[in-house]
Image 1: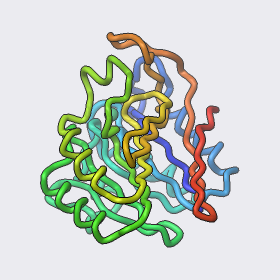
Image 2: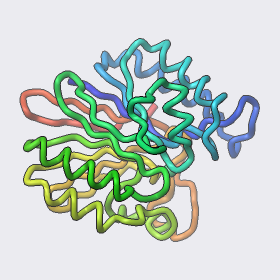
Image 3: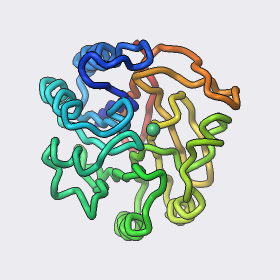
Image 4: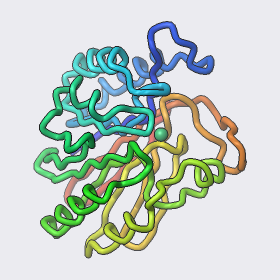
Length: 242
Ligand SMILES: [Fe+2]
């Protein structure tokens, strides 16, 4: 099974200045690069929009994504609107009281998708997650926008961390098997290990954040995606920069 993950596209309205970065072009270039990868599945892990969820942006993205002819899953980030996302991509069955979280089988493997739009994993969602983990006594892959751990990136850890991290960790670390978690949000490439969790932060399609500065500072503008391969019970993944 080969899944490609792209994250934090931050696409603006047509003609909108997105901090001097042509994010639409970045996205189109990444999709062009993805075409040659023979992927089974694509995951877009949130922050599709520059600032706020917008239907025109979602429709434009849907057009680009549908042209790939690779099945894909989406989750919502803090710069998205999960209801609008579900409407645009016809994910209505996956929307639960305004939140977009679900489980999908990709090439037979159960994969969990969480919604952290509000900067937390809601109580309802945590109950659902607890039940899903109990029902799947095995190693699992989870996609969520916010990392459920402190990432070691001072600006993001101080200002934009997952606010109910302790509660979320309590549920995740209670699972008796390893969980491999793929996130975005931090605009860095990083892996953090904690108990049974391996948390992998994938770089943004917009810009990457300096990993030392306590204030907001761009590190670089190289963009990329993550390639995740599961074969013979071995999980390999790496980031490919354009
Ligand atoms: Fe984000």
